[in-house]
Image (tube, rainbow, N blue to C red; front, side, top):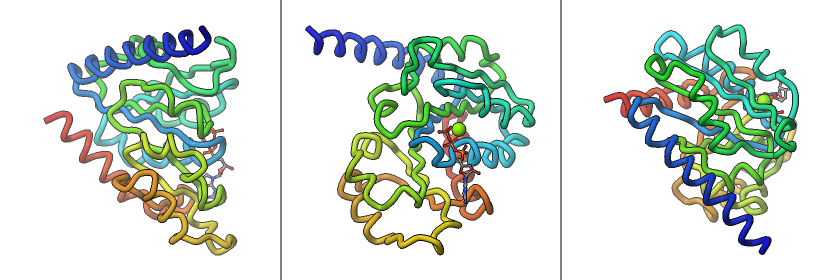
Length: 221
Ligand SMILES: Nc1nc2c(ncn2[C@@H]2O[C@H](COP(=O)(O)OP(=O)(O)OP(=O)(O)O)[C@@H](O)[C@H]2O)c(=O)[nH]1
Ligand SMILES: [Mg+2]
C-alpha cells in the first residue's frame, strides 16, 4: 500500500512535469533545474550567471527553500521576476514538485521570458526523484564536499545533464584528487558535461554561461 502511494505521487508529479514541458516548448522558454546539497553555491553562481546574461535574455527565477526568502532577496538587485517557494508551508519537503513550479510559471509573463532558472531545495537526494519539466538539470557539487559524492549519491548525478564543480578557488586548501572525482563521476554518468567554476572569483563561469546561452538560442530558433 505504501509503495502504491509513493508511486501515485511520482506519477502525478511526472504528469504535471510533462504539462510544464509542453508549455515551455510552446513559449520557447529554456528552463534549468539547479540542484545541489545545501551551500554548494547555487545562489552565488546564479547571481553571477544572471548578471552576465540579463542584458541578452529575459530571465525569471524560482527559488526553492524549506524556509526564508533569503536567496530571493540576494537576487532581487537584478530586478527580474522571482518567485519564492517555501516548502515549509506544504509540510517542509526537501525538494520541489512540478505542480508548484507550474503555479509559479502561471504568475510570470511567459510571452516575455527566455530563461527560467529553478534553484531547487538544497539536498543531494530528494530533488533527483522529482522531474519538473525542465530542459536541463544542472547539479552543482563543491570541491569541499569530496570526490566520492557521485559514487554515494548516484541518482542526482546520473539524471543530470551538466555538473558544475564549484568553489575551485578552495582547491589549494584541500587534498582533492580530480582524477578520483572524474573516475567516480564517469562510472555513474559517462556523458555528463562538466564545468569547473569559482562563483567567488568568476573563474570558469564564462564557459558555463556560453553553454547556457547556446541552449537558449537553440530553443528559440
Ligand atoms: N570559496 C568559495 N565560496 C563560495 C563559492 N560559491 C559560494 N560560496 C560560499 O558558499 C556559501 C554558500 O553559498 P550559497 O550560494 O548560499 O549556496 P546555495 O547552494 O545557494 O545554498 P542553499 O540555497 O542553502 O542550498 C556562501 O558562504 C558563499 O559565499 C565559491 O566559488 N568559492
Ligand atoms: Mg541558495
